[in-house]
Amino acid sequence: MPIDYWASPQFTPRLLARLGLASQEELLARLGVDLRYVHGPSYVGLDLRSYPDGTTEDLWGVRRRTVTVVGPGFEWTYREVVQPPLADAATPGEVEAYSR
Image (cartoon, rainbow, N blue to C red; front, side, top):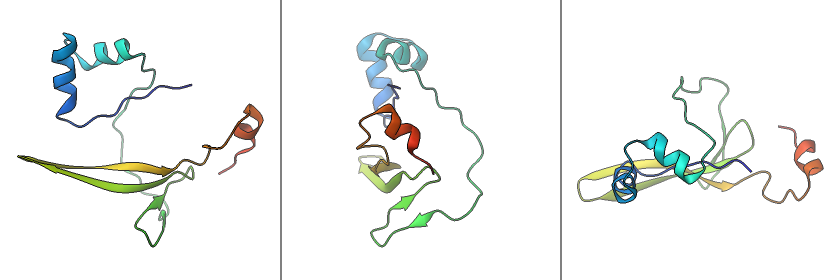
């Protein structure tokens, strides 16, 4: 199973300090994270499917909502998964049969 890491901009430096690590790469290795984020161009394809509740569905069928976090001296947003299309997949065959 792939392991990923996402955190607020405020959290990662605190975690690095707490664990005594010098870089985010060291942190990812310590946590066993095998995915890496590569910043690329923004999506410019067809419009994503939108729902009345404000969620959108991406090209892979993953439904997300925008979450805004506000605190003392900061505000940031992220896209939270609310409906992963393979959440109920129980076998490799069910995963392989998924087409999007």
